[in-house]
Image (cartoon, rainbow, N blue to C red; front, side, top):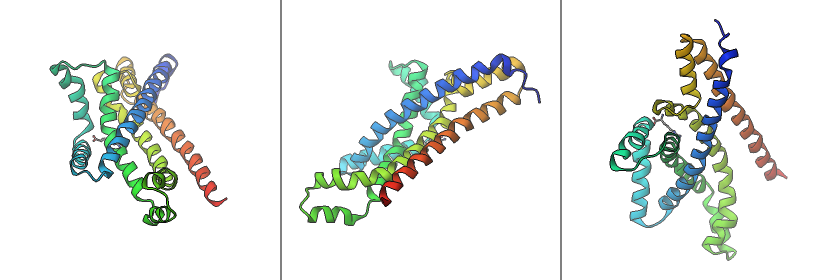
Length: 218
Ligand code: ARG
């Protein structure tokens, strides 16, 4: 094993990690907004809206992210809709993540005990008010940790964006692999960098989760 390439190339990992985190960050935000909308459609009593949301979620979850990325990056320009690489990456990842996030939100809301709504209504709160003050605050506790997991997933899945030439972590590692003729060490390093990102994020989430739970007890 020879890691001497690092002195010359470490900057590639740092720059790549910045792009990876940027990509994942925007994806989680856009994916959340879009996912929230889908979750509301899915929870609505309107059959048509319900069907649209369900169809979207099932289709996106049932097709590979790679195919979705290709459609956004290679397919849409054919219809006159083209995006720069990084934007295409964020769009494809968000379109994908929204489907998963929608289910996280829906499940998080539905996991709140039915009795909570009944109790709120029985003391005279309207439906909207019960949602806002009773259901949502409890649902957030179910949703936030799962959303953190989605962030971690996106950090890892964003490596697929290297394939359309976005110079994120995986792309840069591959460049180093080519430049140094070393197939092994640069990939080990990139794995470690991904792990540092995801592990720190999961520790951070653990910290917030513990804090949320303390509130409950006291
Ligand atoms: N590798 C999966 C696929 O090709 C992507 C899963 C994305 N998961 C997520 N939670 N956003 O479909």
